[in-house]
Image (cartoon, rainbow, N blue to C red; front, side, top):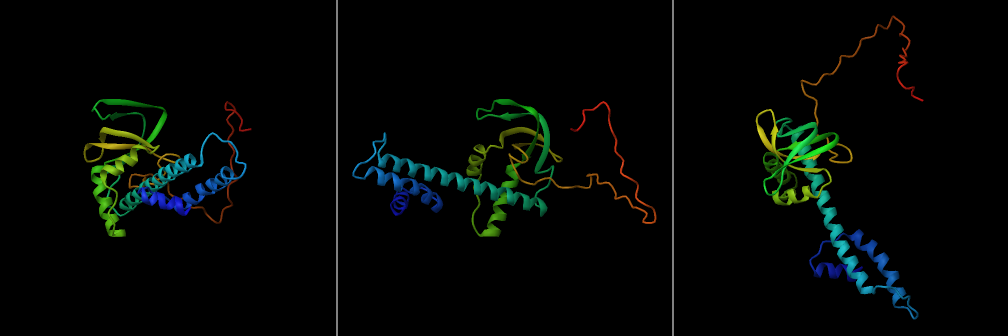
Length: 226
């Protein structure tokens, strides 16, 4: 472990203590086997395995760091929404669509169809990102993730769909970034009840009258639930 950490530091590679411990638990017995009096004949050397583990530790540590950074970004966006700094249908919008048009690097527009209707989150990052940076600085005293880095992280995220050239918001038609929204994709709560949300009034029961028996409605044309 000491040797691995020293090499990672020397080569300026990121690492996580737990990852180093897990990988060296694999390296240690292999080293014993390959340096014993009667070593097993394997198709790799200990040094080759050591170098591979070192590379994997650095790559996995980077992925963990990116994942934590993205998670913190969305938590901050959720806070900004609740705090009124960003607004639903002005800075972000959730909509279910059958397809979406995205812009490629060469400015060519490409239609992305979905097999089933897909709920997407559209976010105007140019408006939201400065607010995220300000909130991060106020909360932690540190600088948040810059725009270029966060876009790089987004593009490797499984929920990322792409850059959409035209999205209708309440105040304008604007560009936005689209993400598949919901559990298994972008698992963050950015939908809020508004004055337009219908909530039925509770039915006031008369305590002097007995409750009506529950009614069971059977549809003879439908398949039975068993």
